[in-house]
Amino acid sequence: MSDTQKTANQPIPHGQLGVGKTYHWLASPGEVDMAMPAPEPVRVRLPTAPQAVTIDLKRSAIVVIDMQNDFCTPKGWCDYLGVDVSPNRTPIDPLRRLLPVLRSADVPVIWVNWGNRPDLANMPPNQIHLYKPAGTGIGLGDPLPGHGAKVLEKDSWAAAVVDELKPAASDILVDKHRISGFWDTPLDSILRNLGIRSILFAGVNIDQCVLHTLTDANFLGYGCILVEDCCATTSPAFCTEATVWNVKKCFGFVTDADGVIGAISASGAVA
Image: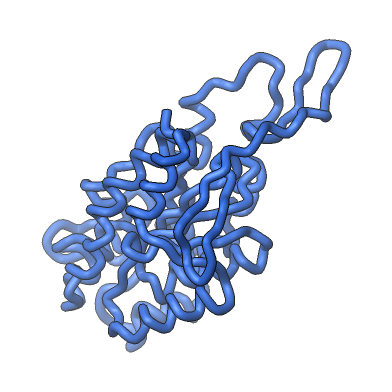
């Protein structure tokens, strides 16, 4: 599934230039109209901390990070390394409840996952060292013992989203190759072209790829909302505590799946 799959599955009306629902151009043989009126917001008040937040569903998306076999599934990379992956599976159930509600409300679901080039040509030594610090063992791009799937390689089983959260045809997938999903990826361009201003964040690890993608979004001017029970980590508990504290203090707001589901349902925005 490519970055443009959402467009491919939702045909653009004749004469419309751009995929954004809140802003695009309209073209005809004699004119290009750049003055599209802004659609009325669909306001939803979320129960967040440290303050309640009202978002516009027409200008909101959810970014789900690294819910992949290598991080969350037995026989994946982390499991091979002896890491207990069960904590990283805890977001599966709340996401299975939340994502259908967001899709029904026409909120884009964007999966941001590790998907390295097979040749690792864009991965500098410091990034490869991060996952193979002694220069030996199974690191990025290496085949996993037993089934041969290559660690976090694009289109491999290892890098695929877990079976329980199979992306819908309308979802958008973005490959990343750093801790932050914004670094050297099209994520920012996609969000801006969709007219997104507020982002819900979910996935693993909350203290690493989720946090750093969220902080980059904050620096870029997006409103950031961490959906805490849709995130997890295999790090010690204090890492989650520090992440949640810092998001509330510096980078955005914190809520949970039931809070979002309840608020959207109460708004009448679900199709």
